[in-house]
Length: 240
Image 1 (cartoon, rainbow, N blue to C red):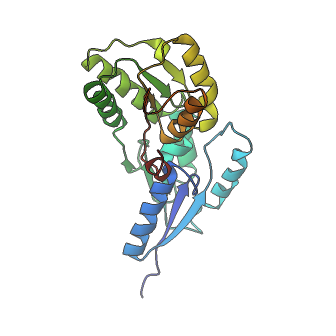
Image 2: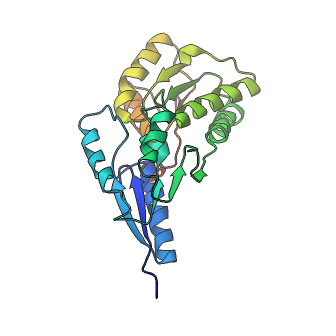
Image 3: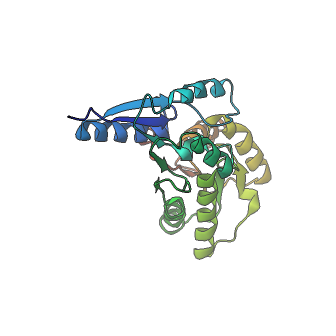
């Protein structure tokens, strides 16, 4: 007897903006190539702190063996505001479904990892060697995020390799959203009367928000400073 089309579930973040869009587009292209049905469950972060984002996550209750044959988790996205144990616990609710994790290594689950440190180190190296930047501000992602922490470690490691002293005054705590950017940049600029040579943001969404805010403060970009993000989202590629 012929087998029916496989139903592959994708637990996704926002489909209109950001990092999750790239994953969704790739999954959609692969589903077409393999003649599979792709069923997308667009939720938000676990314990999302902004507005009513948590309500979107009710859709995760539909991720069951009745609806899908396998499930891809964007663990790197849903885990932004919780620790890894919370991500593991969430994934364990679906242990009766074949799983794949993207971004966080989940015990017993095939996991696709991203080399976050390498990417940030290349950015710091480029800024130091090609643009002569010595005072590079870094806007971090949420404290509980593994990816955010890896990116910050990459920043510190490459500063050391470039012979640039680490300065805590050049570091601010963001949360991967543009909402967090204005207050943390305002605080950072107060600590640094001399504007940094460059602003390195832990993701593109914060970089775009940071660019708008810095320009509103009369800072010329790229004339006065340089800005970088991380993730290569479509909106960043189209922005200048």
